[in-house]
Length: 195
Length: 195
DNA sequence: GCCACCATGTAAACAGTTACATGATTAG
DNA sequence: CTAATCATGTAACTGTTTACATGGTGGC
Image 1 (spheres, rainbow over the protein chains, first blue to last red):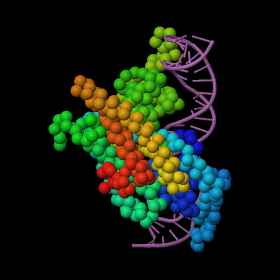
Image 2 (cartoon, rainbow over the protein chains, first blue to last red):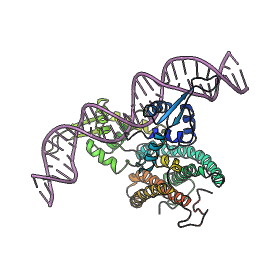
Image 3 (cartoon, rainbow over the protein chains, first blue to last red):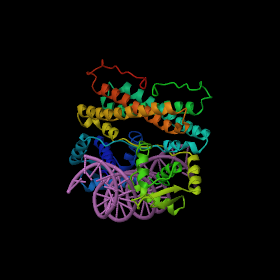
Image 4 (tube, rainbow over the protein chains, first blue to last red):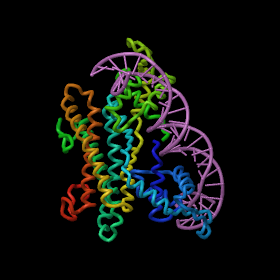
């Protein structure tokens, strides 16, 4: 998907908060933006080299006692300006790829039970994730008054919570539609999204 | 994203219903699976060639009066078997890329108003799409008793409706959090996803 | 005559994943 | 001693988008 390397902006954004190594960036991504924008080492290291060549970040090698090969990257004034400029532009439309829906769309070629099983697995996955997200959301809301810098993190967590909850609600609707026998009277569907 | 060409399975699935040209496939995708699995000509035509080479589909050139260069693709028994085998496998986890959340995550570097504006644009986009989806969903539900083959299409439409509604709800929460002044009392947030 | 739509494709660039390669340190 | 974690990177491959190229048909 050619655009202008959004992942590099993600890295720039993280470095805007504090200087870090590529390894640190990966970890930071993991428990912040990975749910909606993930990146592997195969993207991070080449991006850091590219950003360095462009003068948007600088490197400071070594330093840490006993581990001389650690490279700490810092954002430059130029990099900061570039990031802010990008942040102000309107964002591209969302890109999603739901293999489960693709399979389900052609679900009439396999048995109902197999489709139901797939949906239930999907549901279980996100029930777990929703639990974690809700805990994080509650936590962030509590500390908001003291540290308002967590506001934007909270917003993204809230997004996840809303969407994952929608996943669960849909999964329940779907199973009820496919297996009208188990649990609800035929034709009965609860929830407001259908009315 | 290496996997094993899921888009080819999408094409196979569409051809399983009825023989079509590459051009027809593109249009069919547009108003069926594009919301969760889109594909352009640059993927469709090469995929069709590949599928033909593998013997999963066959081509019938010409035929249509006055337009001799139309190629109609049909799925083979082998293709059908391959599709069904794939449908039965567990699906990979969902792949998403939300540029708006990436920008919002670094929202503290730009003004609150700009973030709010971005969220409102996001909201407007999906409000429109939700309207269309809900209309389609209502329609599909009505014709379900006569034509149960639309069941799986309905399920994917319901998914979209649920998720897009979640987008709208989140957008309202987010704007309220960022601008406590306009419309609601400070600290007040409606909706169940936060409690 | 022009524009929209039908219809097929290719090539280049870009984005992203996976597998590989290397080696130091630390906790059990 | 061995497993996990720290730490950096490359190369090959796959998937996707975009831009380009071509030409016919039908309506205004």
